[in-house]
Length: 111
Length: 115
Image (tube, rainbow over all chains, first blue to last red; front, side, top):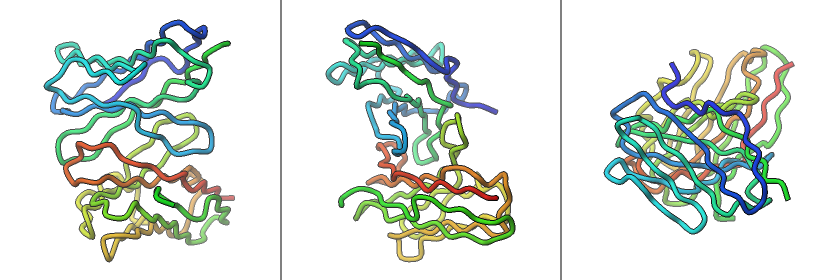
């Protein structure tokens, strides 16, 4: 039972354009959502988060949008840079409980 | 260093062998998590500690898997009688608070290969 789904295994974007990574979840009890970035041979590193009381959180080139009615969140990266090429994991948690990860989306940013 | 440290980085075990994977979390972090990541998949939750208390072990796939954090700091994940399906990267993460609402810091992982 996949509670967090990232339906696009990969995404290719031109440098300077916007990258949009999508994530859907099924558990309406989730109240905190995170994006992690992972390079090969390294552990995931935290990128940005949003709590369920917000619908948008921005940090530099990265913005996360949350649509609770659709149980959908997205990560926007603008402008995309070649160094952004990595696997991006969407994750969700319910206060005080474990964090559940999606399967990841591999982003390729072409120079 | 100040990050989460895992050892060994790589482990090859013969089927049936017992293995122990170590995690040194960031000092002062209350929560510690173990995840299993198969090739091409996201991290799958195994177990969670708040200080020395194991609050959730619902993700451990069988009774061959055992984790401990006796002093609320270093944790060990033990796998007994390893099987080929145990081959994966085992990730440890720690976070400052115990409420699940703060970002976790991950180690580099231990890649276990069972032959």
